[in-house]
Amino acid sequence: MQQSESSRPAERIAHAFVEARRTGSALAEFPGAMPVSLADGYQVQDAALAIAGGTVAGWKVGRINPPEDGVDRLTGPIFADQVVDAADDPVAMPIFADGFGAAEAEFLLRIGAAPDPAQTSFTLEQARALIDAVHVGIEIASSPFPGINSHGPGVTVADFGNNNGLIVGAEADGWREGDINQWAVTLTINGEEIGAATAAAMLDGPFGAARYLFEHMAARGIPLTAGQWISTGAVTGVHKVAVGDTVEAAFDGRLTVRCTIKAR
Image (cartoon, rainbow, N blue to C red; front, side):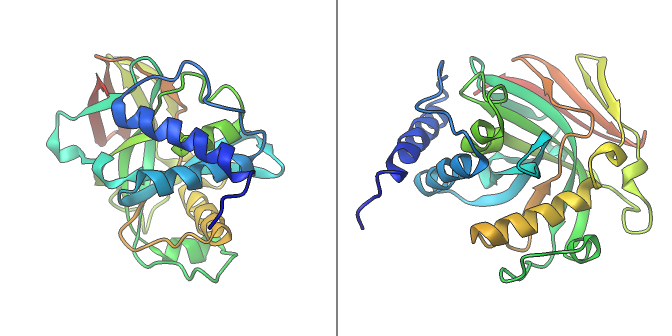
């Protein structure tokens, strides 16, 4: 099938990002015309998914602030070979040393039953019913392009939503009966507290992120599967890290997830 002219620039950008990720190289400049819309960014992301192959073990959800065209979240794939169990402590997570690197304290939701791909709208209750586990964790946000978060959400979306790994910590016990939105969450880097917040400040919370993802993927025609993770957004913010840093996220004063940062 012949490629359309409009798809070729997206594929060239996708190839550049996939190759840079494969080799651990930096991209000093964005490799082409920057996406000016979310649709443009997802066109690049779709092309990169096709080029990269690999198993998608989940999806990260990030906030767009302020919203763009009424959309307040974005998403990107999390590959299976970048999902790490926090029980393997100490965990060393890679970033692109000459690119962008950050750590984010997040609630991780596991899909227990795949949503019907024909269902395009979900209530919070319907989304929550499809989740069979909630864990605490850390998302590593990293890209070969240092300016990944400085040029609008379309650019962030283009490079897998700026995801480069996920650390799955302990189960957030009591999540079914309690309100994890009220849990105090802190993130420290090298022993210094960098951020503190609760998920109550994150739009409609972690289950709202699941609802967004289910609707978004139905619109894109990408099926979700049982067992995939949803990294639901940075509770305390996006905190830049460097090679050699030690990161710790604490949830409800009881559960912690730790990692060190290494070069990709």
